[in-house]
Image (cartoon, rainbow, N blue to C red; front, side, top):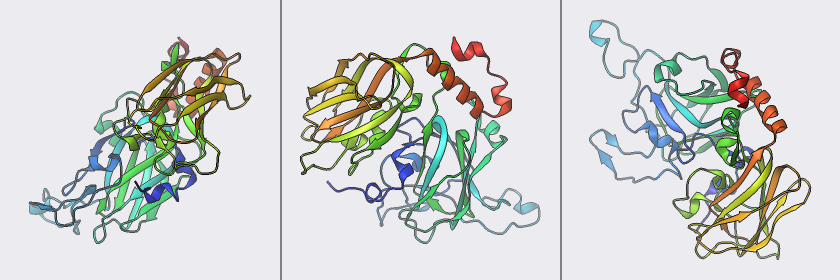
Length: 366
């Protein structure tokens, strides 16, 4: 097995969850054109595949999103409904993020698009709760996240986002004027909706606001995968590090959705048959309190352990010995009243004023 190049030279923001990922729960809501290749390919897991001799009735087959060639607008009644005769200067696609969050970086991957990639792209974010229609999204107020920026062909184009904290539930990718993009990743900090965080929940889940803070090694696959929903489907759908030769051990540190009283933990080694860790230990990353002593693990198994903390926990550290793969990591507990109130205040502050005005205290804290 070899490491995908992006895992060796990743920007800092790529340790965060890909909020657009279909595996996490992202989806394509609308696009204006995907004549040659479906926009739904943008959020597929893994790198784009390419068969240089694959063609169909519409032309070359690409594992990505590809729009038709734009032409200068024509005049006259015969041109009004002609395909491709769009007077706008860009093509666009709107994605619903798996969880509303603060976008910290994007990856616009043009792999395998060499003579047909878009020379420029931009990204915007919008905040709409619940389940808006495509028509509502097209008419929404959008905040610029990435100004129109130059792209290179057959390249993973990475861009950090420096916009002041803005909660995005949807993002819009625009390409200028047309062309093909293989994958689109939206890395960010998920913000859990406090209306649904009462009672015992998985405080580490990305969809609830859990996130990876740091990691000793992610040579093969990203630690953020461990916080995704559902069961892993393949080994690369988890966190796998390189084999250690120095006598140490690997670890991840997770910030929970908020400080909480912990109840149980799931350490899932599913799909890791010959390369699961031999043992694991869980501790409070801030105080060092041991929540789960060093405990033997079994390959390809979902382990459930009862844990208890003497005080509320905000961050946890999972150590694996000496190395190996973890498919999923769950930390079940209940937010403290103070943590839930703090999360509610932050969430409201990140919402547009007109959206926040429609949220009552009853919804937030009952």
